[in-house]
Length: 233
Image 1: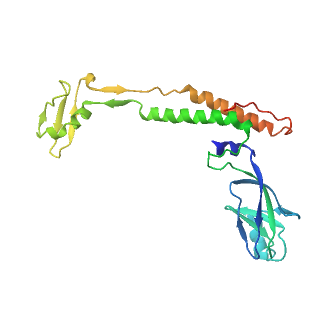
Image 2 (image 1 turned 180 degrees about the horizontal axis):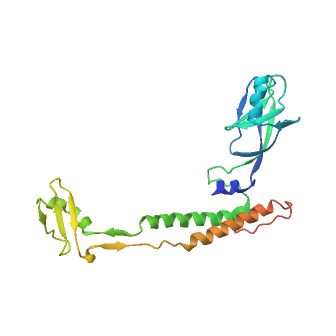
Image 3 (image 1 turned 45 degrees about the horizontal axis):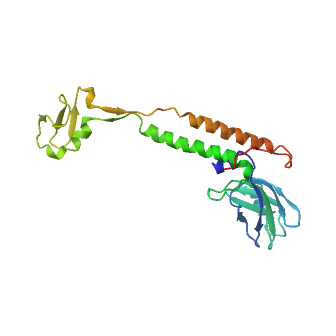
């Protein structure tokens, strides 16, 4: 859920430095990177964003060869490509929006996100309970279950009455030892079923979505006046 919130908008942003090496072509993106705002040489100029196809073209025509500090960058498969390829050590500051880490023990969001987190957790918990209920939905316990527990007491290969089952229920034991039940008595079947509707899920999901909408709307406001109601949990 924390990951889901961070994916709705650029709520989490940071700057990470990537140190180049002479003649090295590609570098790992900062962990959790979602969208790059800009890359710049530390205390220097901005790098221009280019496509990976343009990078390959630069390699082909030789303009990507090592010379001085990089001027361009491209992304591909979790890697950053800077070119011209650095001829030494330069620190490239990557300013980017990021996803929330998978861990839930350390929440990166501020207090204004508390209500959304609270409602989202409740919705997830209720949903988990619902799925468990649906897994148990419309289950039946029949005389088969009763008979199988006493199969070892049956050594006949013909149709016989099994003590402990309904009067009109018969237990058939085949030569391979498999057991089958036939019965015309509804009382021999116990059915239990849970309701499939769980209104708490809808309620908390709607509240969760409403809080996310408020947070996204606040991105449009000045930081000093942006206010979101939240519950202190």
